[in-house]
Length: 410
Image (cartoon, rainbow, N blue to C red):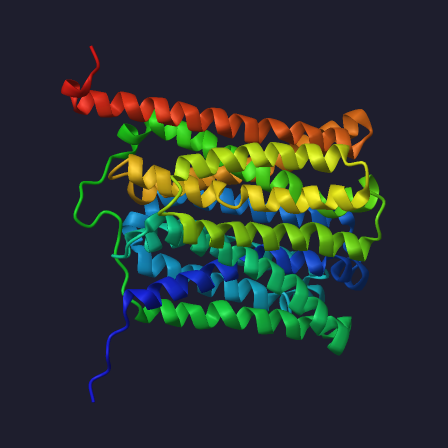
């Protein structure tokens, strides 16, 4: 019997697992930092450099993908991304001990692992969204929000399932955990070999990068992506410390009511938007979320009670949920023919925001000596996002009038 070919629904399911893979890449190793520190004697500053290397490689991949992905193709790129992520995750179980024995440095093995899984994570971020956007399905904005919600569910799964694993098997079994999590990208690489994949460029002319860079609208989207990343990461990266230091709650409770609740409500917002996308215009949704984000930061900082401050952290997760995928959807709808290069450059802008947001909070906190004051600085990003949305609307109207001069009001 002839095997029935897989449908584009399988492509979307594989893409969901791709975002779960990215969540594993970004959230598994931080759970093991203290283990690396105690077992291999790696200092805290060197561990910090692991984070910097991961983020720096993903930024570099974003930039390089604008040119390279169209040459190697979506399928080759996304399969290679998952294999690279799997090697990096599984390598954490083997390479540190191996390089310690051969080179006298476990840190060298960790660096190699970070390079592999960061390459995979960077490629996944660039490729998954255009792969789903290119699928011949309806409701692109809804599909994009639902797709990005799987990063949130993946983030929660990594934290909760890993914590449960350690409770049952003990911290001494961390190598097994790394291998188990590596199985998902390894299997998904095979899945992506089988599913049908279209490209955004099929059926339309691709816009050259220099022409894309000359579009005012493109730079507005870059600002929106930067603000989306900064609004999200400024809270998510500092939520645990803010709950413990700023709100004076127990660390375990703070982690569950801070980062975990943040991720849960961010995913909920994306699923909710997927359901309501046809009823509520995306611009109205995003402006409303931007204003809600401002309120959430104010609530967290000026809360009269810890429980209200934690609620502010959770509401912030809900408010930023649609910002990132919503900007991708608006960009695809507005800039026809932007193609993979546009997704790669917008991902670069978003990642820059992911770095800028937590950095601004940290620097302002050091300057003022108060984490609340530092967190208050992050309010600038959702405000700027709302202004950017209004500018997008203005430019969109101007472009429509240029295309249809007869619609100009005399």
